[in-house]
Image 1 (cartoon, rainbow, N blue to C red):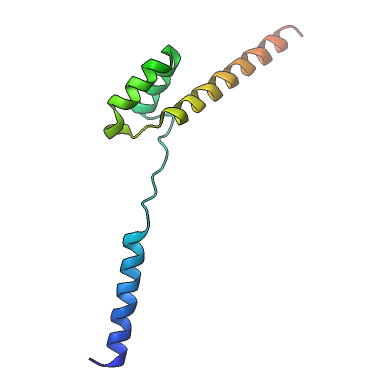
Image 2 (cartoon, rainbow, N blue to C red; image 1 turned 45 degrees about the vertical axis):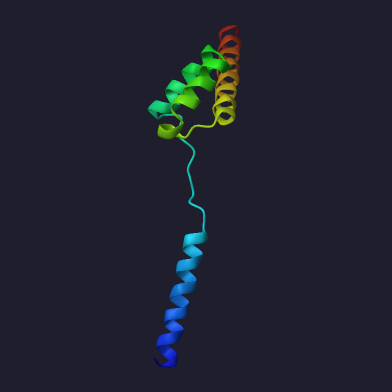
Length: 92
């Protein structure tokens, strides 16, 4: 083997090793997906119902209990603020 071929082969091995060792990027589920919609509905029923749903569907949706609860709380807060703004606008 000549030096040029050996050099290309080594570069290929280094790139392949880097790709194999790189963790896969996992995107968070979108709030519009069926799994997330159901998870948010379960969060509205209470933390135990959500915890059970996340555990039961972990292999399907890969949801995180804390992330779902944060999203639920944020949407609940946004909804309350929106309702307050509508009420203020109605009083003017």
